[in-house]
Image (cartoon, rainbow, N blue to C red; front, side, top):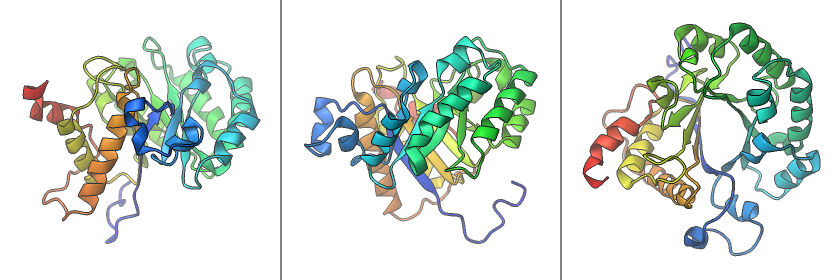
Length: 286
């Protein structure tokens, strides 16, 4: 990244905003087509989705192929790595299950987006295990295949150190920015490889239940607009009461509004998490 910003013309930025899963709450149904499956309707309102069901159980390749075929050409799927690898095996001896997993998800073809690797809260960093996992993943999922994107969501403090960050960069693996942050305050901002910024917004103060207010989303839209990250993913995971869909729609609208407005006077220097300043801005309304 030494001379990443030396070009006079910035590289094109891709920003994707969606939800974890594709359930469409009744209160937001008017924003989507009336006909089709939930996925088909969702894919005409958002440009991405995060598949969490793959964490709990495998899907046949023909299922991934069907999902790919029923969505628009520019739609992308982020796919969560199975818990059998991350939680049960805790990253050890995972070559066979990883091979099986990639054989299935390649049914998405070019619509395969980032691979999401969420680690257990108690799983501390072990360099040998991390090296083995990342090496195996990169053998099966090289950077040139589809997007090659990988987003790691660690939740133990030992993963938030400069040496680990350098290791992630060497494998071109991004570290997820999560709200609320788990394991370390550093978890609220993107880390690792800077070619991908991946946010997972779980809901604050009540995880999975709380909605994000307009002040938060307005500040976040500014962060996305002024970020230097070439590829940005924002996934709302506050799905319990249907707020994820509404928040994703509102953020998309605010970002579009900013993109059609005059540029901001003072763009930010990095892609940081908007939570602290946005909450400070909206504290009187919470």
